[in-house]
Image 1 (cartoon, rainbow, N blue to C red):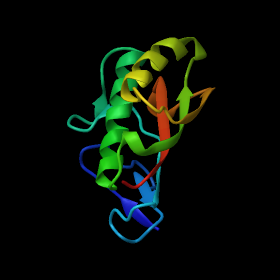
Image 2 (cartoon, one colour):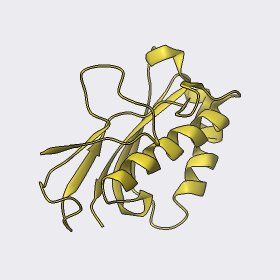
Image 3 (cartoon, one colour):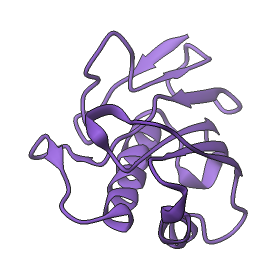
Image 4 (tube, one colour):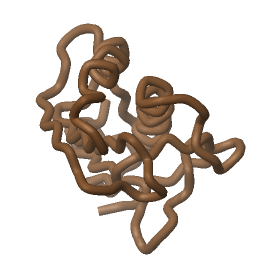
Length: 132
């Protein structure tokens, strides 16, 4: 297992990695990448992007994409995501943005409403992907 880090996504704010790869080789085909949940933090400013759940979902998926690319994968290689929403009433807005990032062959997904997310985010997404 090897950690994945990138400055193109927000740094971990606790004792965890942005993601981990199951193989030691830096982009060995067939390895798995498990990402930590990504928040709507702009890595350039360290703050949440302005707007509602659509804007937050966009930033979350951009952060997720950056972490996956740092690990030798991409959104096209995601096999499973888990979406955490503060309010299930935001599902349609989140889903519209989500669909634009996964235009063909969307991964398996679970979506759950949670009582609270870190820093009071509206959405957080984690993923499992294969290396390219």
